[in-house]
Length: 314
Image (cartoon, rainbow, N blue to C red; front, side, top):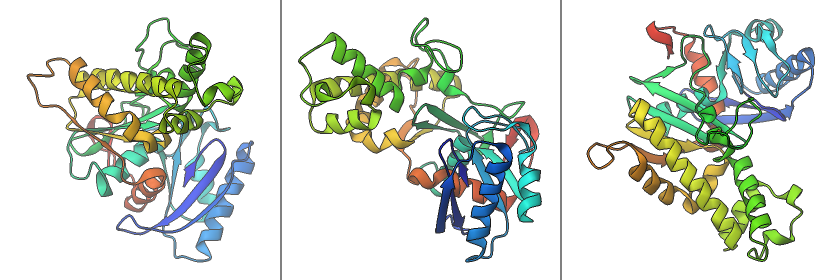
């Protein structure tokens, strides 16, 4: 299950990563109501399938025991023993995982990062979610919250971020950032847009900007070039620290990869330290799309938690 701020999406997944069936419901506001909604979706799918375990992919800080949600900005849980609560409701083993980690695991097991030892998954959506593979295993840090790559500071004193900092990577490289850049460009370059100029600035979204860019709108193209630039700059910074063999780009913005990924690769190659004297990471788009977190959460739940030394988990 992928538990997001607006909806709970669920899928029945087999041992080969195949999605057999799906269901969804709205995300309830209160803890008890949300847990009841999750249990209801599990119950619905169990009427049609023999379900053995439940995995919950959550956009928030998941404890290193994969039982508790410490904090989730768009969900009601705070230091909540979510896995045990859901398990009591549905009578099945329940495993929690950060949604980006779940997607990373799915791409490693079944998708673009299959077989790699050291890899980075970057999900470009409303913000940036990220996952890290070290020696073929998920790395979650000492306390279960790594890696928050979206909140690396790329622009000191830049755009404010809901996290409380300013200049975070995701404020320049995400669906939200794409819209913000387009609105700024519309204000400073009046008359340059053939499509977006007709929009109310408050109605400009990343999806609308991507569509306008595909139609050749000059402002939208400029905004997309800015996203490509910051994606390349950010990946260079990440590569300086992790030296991955592959970077997988997922999330909703990745659907527009033909508009920005080649340029981002060029920026990455120019910006990474020693770029002409070292092997560089392959940069690929995700293969599993929006289903990655569901597939990863289910597969992790089926295999069960396996803590290992150094904060890595299978």
